[in-house]
Amino acid sequence: MGEVLTVQGGRPVDGTVAVRGAKNFVSKAMVAALLGETPSVLRNVPEIRDVTVVTGLLGLHGVDVTQPDDGVLVMDPTDVESAHVADIDAHAGASRIPILFCGPLVHRLGEAFIPDLGGCRIGDRPINYHLDVLRQFGAVVDKREGGIRITAPDGLRGTRIDLPYPSVGATEQVLLTAVRAEGFTELRGAATEPEILDLVAVLQKMGAIIGVDTDRTIRVEGVERLRGYDHRALTDRIETASWACAALATRGQVFVRGATQPEMMTFLNVFRKVGGEFDVTDEGIRFRSPGSRLRPLALETDVHPGFMTDWQQPLVVALTQADGLSIVHETVYENRFGFTKALGGMGARIQVYRECLGSTPCRFGGAQFRHSAAISGPTALRGDDIVVPDLRGGFSYLVAALAATGVSRVQGIELIDRGYERFAEKLEALGADVDWTSTSSVPPARGRVPAHV
Ligand code: EPU
Image 1 (cartoon, protein in one colour):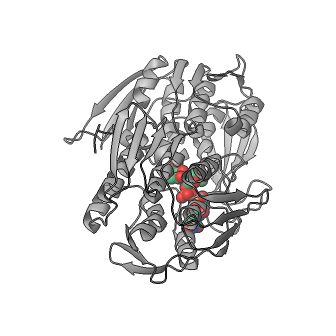
Image 2: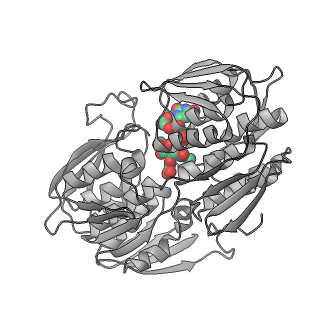
């Protein structure tokens, strides 16, 4: 059953939380450190389990990772070496990050072994784009029992790539491979999420030559060597939006210290349309629920600069409190509405559909995936026993539990630890009545990075 958070709901959240570096950037910047010949310094690093996982994976490959100060990681890749397959497998756990080790490890060691990948169960989540990209650089992909071995007998060479979909991970795969490949790489159809642009900034500090055009084309001129970097991670825009939705759903207010406006613009527009109010300051963003009812709306998730798929789940919970019918069309993952079933048990009225309920062309249209949702509100939510399905769905259950009257027992909250730093402490700081109990005999990995790993 794992860890359980008991939430006594029905109270507005009220207070301040600090949000640090973006999970979906920090882990990639840590992988980039493998490419340098000198140590890298990453700042604003949150204490989340994904950081612990990547720290362990780097350690297995001979990278010395230390934490001289809170939120600061120093990664020394001087003695990169091959890791034992069983160790990689044991360390990777549910993470999908190991796939991004391919390019850097092949550059450094001539080969890489990647165990079968985990990650949140929000769709099929294949790695075909990653493997196609690596092959185009000249890598040989050998599928073996328990994982994949990648080699490049003739080295990795720059190439022209056209992605069938602007995949975040595949774009990062190209960047991390192209920077030290021989010659030029042109990537068309790239993802341009802020976390990717921050990775480009890191690679540029390391000595890479990368141009990002306005038409989703990225051009990389390979270089022979890269040095370490010193960089402060951009703020986690998913965590920021998650707390904003908690304010909306509970009719409360949250000041998110560290939140920055440019990465939040699309979310802020939606927040405003639903009826929320916000103030942007130099220190962060204050999100407030209106005194009156929320307004319903129709939206579609999309790649950047569209409305992020990871903002969808907590927003859906807030929309259960809106006055009328809201429609959400999920166009990034085919199976990201599974979490709504348990919300139904709490009193929400959410219907999921196979049809595209939106105008954006979507890859899931003719298929059998329930990827559109209609949310009727407002509905009073009641506390319930709920099991966390995945990271973002799990946080959205916490939001629902806060908004509900009565007690909720949210089970499996260790999944939320992957991407939300010290969330139980933050909930308490917002005045929530929560109690964390462990039902397993093994103490949970709480994301703390040891002083020396
Ligand atoms: N896809 C393929 N083949 C591939 C790769 C992706 O078909 O080889 C498909 C996926 O199945 C999905 C779509 O392309 O339908 C987009 O996937 P993408 O590659 O962009 O996602 P990702 O790199 O695996 C990252 C984040 C996700 C976030 C997405 C979209 C990390 C570690 N994960 O995943 O974050 O939802 O981009 O922005 O960066 C989360 O934080 O909870 C999370 C799931």
